[in-house]
Structure formats: structure tokens, C-alpha cells
Image 1 (tube, rainbow over the protein chains, first blue to last red):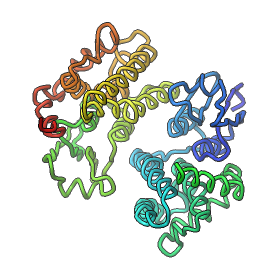
Image 2: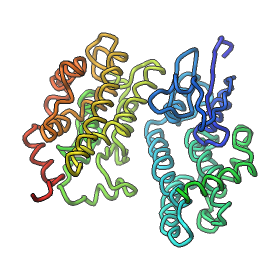
Image 3: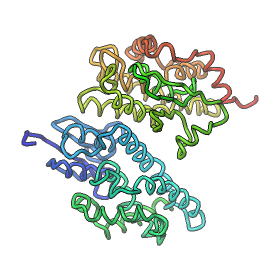
Length: 223
Length: 227
């Protein structure tokens, strides 16, 4: 640090994909310029930097563009080496990567699909989501965070997506998805996350976010 | 190489298993190749990958590693002092390689697969057009990444070469099925030459499946509807 680094992040206030990048940059103490995007009216900057996917987050570091949230997280970890985000041990790294993929592919798919259904069709998807969350529950046994004693890659990925995004949608629908009784480790982890400054500073404001997630769920249902 | 306990659960026909095998060959790691029987899943597979129940699974000193690209990363990191580096050394080049590897699996492969599963001519034509468009992007990616060198990774094959190159056998099977060339000297001249070099690489040649054998297997996996 102290180098003349130019870091920009294109994101959306409600998106877990850009929020997790903010957590990582904060952990590394990297200053950045944040540019809020509007999905209904994508900026020419976004379309130029991410022409294939046209999606956020986009990180620009000294003029170089990096896209895809997992790719960006690994880039941040490899560029600013202090306060590591991924575990040092190769096997632990592979576990973190596999579970991050589970969160962003499987849990996101069934989780968001569960918002689309009426009460009747919802139960199956809710159960499927819970089954997947059991994998995370297992991984948290005996740990404060996925990263061990401190937050890291999987805490950012799972934290931004589940407690501070999907759970807010389920709360809005009156669904108690991840009970303390059935998921004690998960719930302990969420309580601990709320004590971590870089997490608390980087999550969308609660009430505004619940309203946003409710609107999103309605849109999905009426599609 | 030191006798380490390395097993790989997989199959000769799987693109994803091939990635793991190429990486192991690059690092000169001896391993026991446990081939699954088509149509059933072994107990070891189900125990090692209980969530997805899919191959490949690398088992190193009794610890299972799943997901082909994650396995390749693991091999590069666990044996980082032996053999060539599989991922590029600069963080930005690594990010580019990871981005394109994810694109290949998430976008490009989906459209290739939809050629094999297309019902009727119209659907097939649309799938072919999409593959053409996406392959053009890969041609550009190759030119950008290789910077005039023989492989995506430069002088030697690496992560992105493996991610795309492991598809070459199946790609050829799809070309025969669709009666259409995707790797073409006029449309994708760089990729055509790269494909030849990749298949000739000593880490790849012994394990690239024969096209006729693969085509026969494809007929089993994707049976054509009866006329």
C-alpha cells in the first residue's frame, strides 16, 4: 500500500455479488471509488468493461478490468497479500472454493426459485435449500467463521448471499428457513458476523433491503 | 516422484476427468485411476462426493477434492514445487484465465451440448449459430492471452488450455453429428493450430480418447429419436 493504486468497483447496493467485493477490499484496507449501477439503465462504462456478460461486479485496477465475483476475490487476495482471504492450505482452499460454488450455484438456484412459488409449491424447494445449507452447517462445526478465527472468502460469499440477502427475502415472506434449533452453528456464525465491522459496514441497509427483496420476489412470481 | 497416495475417480470419456489427468501428468504425479462403470456410481464416489455424486474426485492422502477446475487448482498448489506452473504467475493473467475457464463451462459448453440435444432442424440451427458466436470469442481470447505464443498459457499448456482443450474430443464428435465445422481455418485459424499443438502435447496425447470410441459412447448418451 502507499502505491498510487487506482481501484474502482462497479456494483449495486442490493447485490450480494458486489457487497462481497467491498468486504474483501475493506479487509485489505484498499481504497476504491464505488460506482453504483442501474440494471434498468446500464452505464456505457459497464457495457464497455463487461461486454460479454454486462453484469456487476466489475473491478478496475490501474486500468485493468476483472469480472466475476469469485475471480475478483481471488485477484484481490493475490494482489494485496496481507490479511489473506483464502486459507493457506491447498486442501482447505479447495473446500472453500467448492462450498462457494455450492452457495452461488445450487443454493442461489433453489433459494431464488423458492421465492417464485406460492405457498403450495414452496415446501419442496425450501427443503432442498435446507439440505444444501446443512453442508455449510457441517463446515462451521468448531469454528467461529468459515475462515477459522477470522472472516475470509467463504464468509464473504455465503454471508453476502444467505443471511444478508436470501434470508431477508424469506423473512419478508414469513418463512422461517434456517432455525436455530436445526442449524445452531449457522445461527451462531450469523451472530458473530454481525459483530465484525467490515461485514456490518458492507451489507445493504436492512429495512430498505427487505422491501427490495419483497419486490423482487413479487416480480419473479408474476413472471 | 515420491509415493504419495493419489487416486482419481473418473472415466476415460469425461472431459472433466481429463482436466485432472492432464494436470497430474504435467506434474508427473503417479496416481491410481479408478474408472467408474457407465450407468452406476461406485460407493467410493458416493462417499467422496456425497453432495453432487459426480466425477472427477481426486483423493490425496484420503482427502477428497471435487470439481474439475478446483482439482486443477489444487494440483497446482499442492505440488507447486514440482513440474511447470499450471496457472499463470501474474494475478491479472490468472484472473483472465479463470474468467475464460468459467465462461467455457457456464456459457460455451451449454450451447455445444444443446446441439446434441436439439430436437429438430430449427433448434439445431439456432444452437449451431450460438456456438459459432461463442467460439469466435474464444478465438479472440486465444489471440489476446497467447500474445503470439503457442498456447493460452504461453510457451507451455496451462489452466485455460486444459479447460478448453479437454473438450476437443467431444467437440469433434459434435462436429460430426452436426455436420458442421466449428474449428475452421477461415473462421478460427488460431484455435485450429492451437488444437493440433494441444493434442500433440505429451501430457495430453496418451489420454485423449479416440474419436470413434467417443462417437459410439455419444450415441449411447444421446440416443436419436426413432424415425
